[in-house]
Image (cartoon, rainbow, N blue to C red):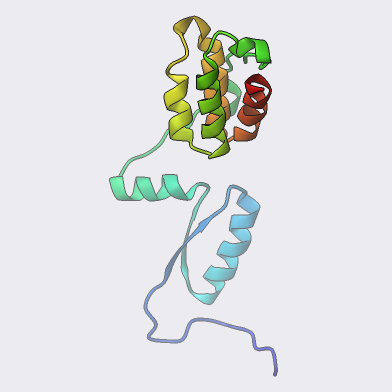
Length: 144
């Protein structure tokens, strides 16, 4: 079987529009160049979800600069930090994290008193980053 090289799309083909998505410009360029050479109509995007939302809604986004992101002090997670919460609540948080149930994790975090907002924020950040392993480890030592 001989290896044949594609030179272009056959005549009378429909116009194919391709969206190339990658966060790295170099990767997008390689794929875009390959596809345009053959005859595809190519658009590029760094983030596919943002691009599709913008296309359908007709909106433009302004992006926050990475250097300006807010950084709040993170609570150090030790077993003593949760001592004020009921053991049943801690067990529920542990179970929710084990099941990767972020909805339940956030619902449980709402029950943390306002006097411990830094703890709630730290746990919420872990859940947002899908770091359930850290929540599991933290609550495992507390539930024993």
